[in-house]
Length: 201
Image: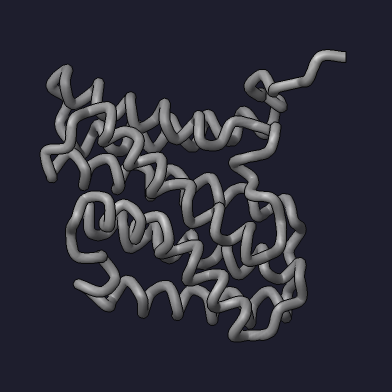
């Protein structure tokens, strides 16, 4: 299951990267680079921290899926422009998928639970950070706004808690992905944010 969820995460995140790059009117190569960085960046950092072979080097299918999803999105969005708000849904799905994949992989490598949850967050958000930097934007995760990394972390912790309570890894993974997706979309819908630092007047 983890393999296919990871593959879906790569495809979805490549789509979000290319969709976001369309705002900057990038050419095909620029859009593909943004899509690939979005799809593979978080997992790459995770694997480096776990000292394991980087997943898309060990299995080039991930890279091929990212390229195919990016190409398809590039040509479709040129022909059928999408409303910017539609970007939020695949982005939330990618966040949920990658966070759970990263957390499960870290647990399989016998990483302590707190570190595993943070590796899940890294897997989920770093690709988006790279996407925003390449698009010359302040990374979404660093701005005051609706819950993003927080939703990922709560989902990762939920996954760990559910498995500790004896829920099967498959069921726990789906439930945790649903938690992340719902938290993110509800935060966007109702503008739920964390307190931000404000210097004294």
